[in-house]
Length: 222
Image (cartoon, rainbow, N blue to C red):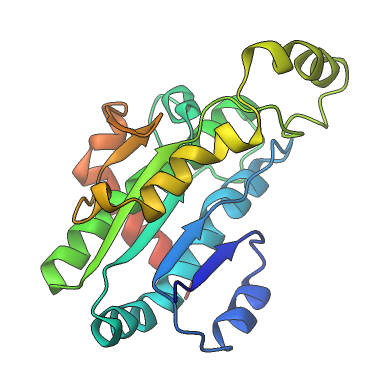
């Protein structure tokens, strides 16, 4: 039986409450983000909560993978928007700094963090010899209510989007593929788009940046 853990909330206490349920989990899908006009909320909701949940569940996933003799998979839903972050990639010392804040870049920053997290996690899991993979993906441009706080712009996207964007089932395709398809078995530290391995930005492939983000994130959740 395939057990899932889905993160839809970045509240630390709710995450800890969930992990206390001690469910056997061998597939973790980290997905949940909104376009929020607030500096810290982007990073907290779209990344930090995912990192915390993964940190709390990874040992359970290792145990489940061993007992079930079945590969575990951790999937971070990122976005092509990771390419449009701040020039430094991750603003470690300015996450809640209103000066120089840009909502688009902040969203891109959180999506870049999702990829860096998956890459560093994949490296660490491989070093541990764990039967778990970690990957990230871009689901595509989908007709959802992501931009519902942007007034007229949201109305424009809702009208035009139905003709040029993916619908919900199409938008879920790459996520389901990376989480479930046998062809992805053993693949780890990859970035997917349209059910294929894709090439992320140079910053997303920066191993030094991924290690720095990992250490920074561990300090955040202490």
